[in-house]
Image (cartoon, rainbow, N blue to C red; front, side):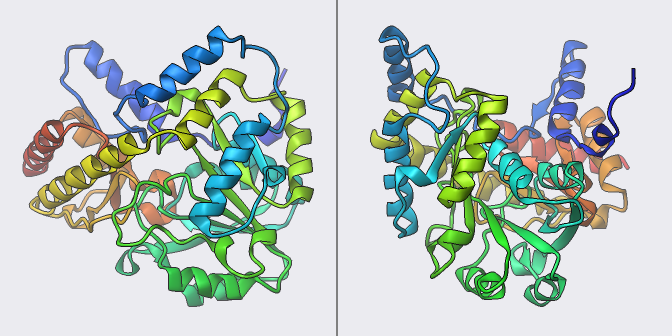
Length: 388
């Protein structure tokens, strides 16, 4: 038997592959500083854990509604309405196991073969993977370092055609940490408002920002709510990556399609984790604020350290917990340099090219690690580069 040809079009996340190699080195006795995986290194806040325990004790261990528990959808709708200055109700919310289904399910529902999808490059690898898997046409738009890793708006405008069906935005962004300025979001909305184009706005890092104002959502603009699929979740903001709980906010006609895909794949999201999600949104937010403050301190120190390394240049990211360092001055391809930092320097990081062709010449470091380890990582990188 052979796999179906469609499997040749599906990609992976290199972070997990690099993590396997890093742990293999650790098993051999090597000291490795992990800056590859994109997850907070903080514990899930205690009141959320306690809510999950209570839910288990109360018997929230059976099937729930495919779309999500009504109480959680109410809490999400209230949170999104408040933070994005829009009016949405629980009927617009779909709760799913992780954020990725809100990439995959709407794409399945919307895209025909040959439809064009515009997306950021470098960007989260699953965007391009799913576009290719579904037989659509990927249209990568390079993110411009000099613009804080936002789009070249003229190039974006010129890339929109009658075949464009979906535009993907991600702010704050993985892998660059860039935050799209409000003026750019407004300009982008003007480009698509009167076209038959949906926008997938990936806002999974919405709570982790260092700018004066929160990242601006395109869904907040006139006539854009009905054209937007807003992706958010609990993994990053509440250090709940292993809980697998995300959600999408979108028009009801698309919610119906997502529900059908959920029935055919997952049935529902685990009920007891959803009860914990209610506690996350409605409970105290001080742990989130402490986490973001710690990330800011790490960002400042780590990026300053990277900028002392010959051949490295690293701008301060506006959000998320990634430093996307320009390493073109080192003179090695990104993949070769990332491998050298792992095997020679004991620092596990990601080749920028793994996030798309426009990521070549960059290295992504996750600063979701202790300040002490980040400072040690800088010294190891500096020593490894000096040995070239």
